[in-house]
Image (cartoon, one colour):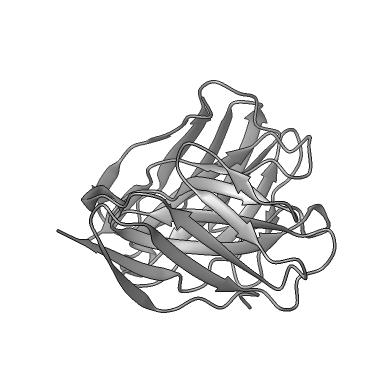
Length: 111
Length: 117
């Protein structure tokens, strides 16, 4: 069973920031939050991950709430190529770092 | 960095044929590799976890004699679908992780689309 809850879909305007929410209310202390995306007919692409601190890389920012029960992935300037299904996944070493993919959020970036 | 190559990209073959899919980590050593399957309009489902030099661990409901996994080196894992039938047609995706540090992400190949006629 997926341990995260995400909106089924969302639209974003090209050039604007896209904020993708994820709930993981049952997350345990050792579990990391990972974000991946899958563009049609390709393998998933790693975006970012974090434990409790906010993280930023060249692709996105990850904001994790203080209680760690939810997080938000921020794409600062969405482009048409960011159209994809975005997956929020929690995992830890105890689970063999296995990833359980839920339904994800289907993001459509519109011109 | 962290490139995973999967081959072939697609394959079409007759029912009863065995098909081998290769997964290579090109610029890092992968202690652990994972194999997933994805049916149309569905999410990825983990099939098995493969650690270098040991037997793969299969998820519940996945037939180990049907899906043979070999992880003989730190850069190569193979999945062989034995005696494939039309119901085995799917998108097969591998991923690789260094596994050493507990928080290292998995990096995915581009998948193999398998069609059994």
